[in-house]
Length: 451
Image (cartoon, rainbow, N blue to C red; front, side):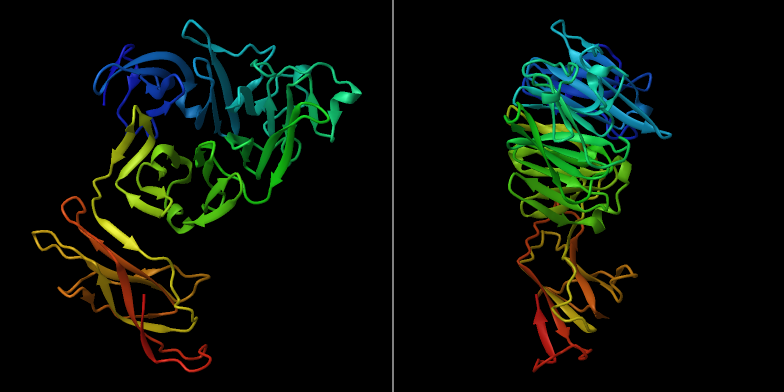
């Protein structure tokens, strides 16, 4: 898309500046986060006039990009708040800004709002997390592991001096509808809340030591209840994305999870996420297309309800604008189409020999480009990684001779350029011989075909 920068300050080319620029399609505004000429991160408001022409108006510098790992938005339509967070040399940097009616992002009124590293809108109530305490008693003992909620209809987090009936359960403080909760991970407020995101009828809190769920309650006072969610936390705020219906996050062990109102499901894929640069990983959600893009600026994946696949489009941010998919991305020029199965042991842990592969449903283009097949294999699932055989072109009948003996294998197929080739895949079958019969119980054929 063509962007006219009214201030001439932004570096709009993505590449060495990964993951910037980033775009956010809000309820009223379209915002961009762009590195300026002085290596500062700027907030822009974007407006699309006609066709693909956009006007970008610089609103506010958030500070030096070296001190910013992530940004968050509490979107209330014509009013929004922006926060930024980063850790450099073990020093925590964070700040927040509010948009005033004149079109400026202004500093927080510290008498009523503490500095915060993440934020969201929950049904018109502001939620903030990872709080830098200013020493003001109106903010209790809020810290990096705190989530606070504002007075209803106001961006105000002040707490009046506590009375005996304003504290309950040892953790919550209410006055009259503003309050906060210190998360249960981290000692002496050393844990960090990286992200707060609305999900269904509550808010999921993601931190470096775990996760939790806040939900509205009316007794003994109008506030929020809390439920600890068992399981791992996350390492960066950019490792979670989603909508009010569903979130995807990457945990501390690089495993991908799906979270909905009624289920938390581990999807896995850690052997692929392991190859990415952890600090650079971005997850981008496009709810209208049911897609999550995961990338570190070098390698990219797309997660759909059917599964995850690699993609040559390395997406830093994306969304739907007037029904059109828009965003910022890199093209790594890798146009090879590759398919790889999960780990297969065919229900038996002994050594087995794969003598060949059969691929069904393969179509070739006019240049007679053929699909190639290969096998990854390993002997020890605890200490050894996978080794891959050479690629072998399929015969016109769709077969390939690939000889591998191992307990575990993965079956692979590829074609050189998906842009010029139609590739359909109905099945991959492995011609299998059980060469190690130590673990076989009962009668079994010595040779079969597994798919």
